[in-house]
Image 1 (tube, one colour):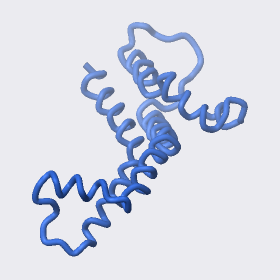
Image 2 (cartoon, rainbow, N blue to C red):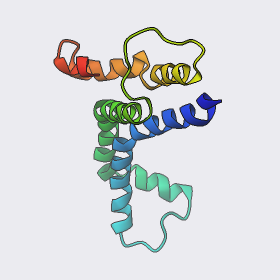
Image 3 (tube, helix red, strand yellow):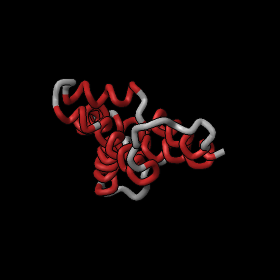
Image 4 (cartoon, rainbow, N blue to C red):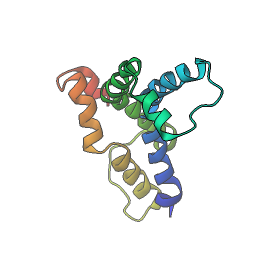
Length: 136
């Protein structure tokens, strides 16, 4: 029950935290639309497509892709570490009590906050041989 009501929302928050960089680029794209002198935002799909296909928007599309590839893994990891520090705390070495629901939840949350794919995305960017990887 704790996995459903506490664990899944926490993993959702960590995933959302990882989407901040591309969302900021999208905000910048839409901010320029709000500065244009138009009465309404878009009255039909054709206007929207014409606006999105304007060559002045291309740098924003590249920025979104670059932010997602280079910055999102770090933002996700920062959010996951923050959740770990607040909810789980330090993991102490020693035997685990398999009957303790709290310890099972902590291990489940760790496994879902730090899956191999997410950790590998960060290590691919900073390299496997740096000291920063040992901090993670």
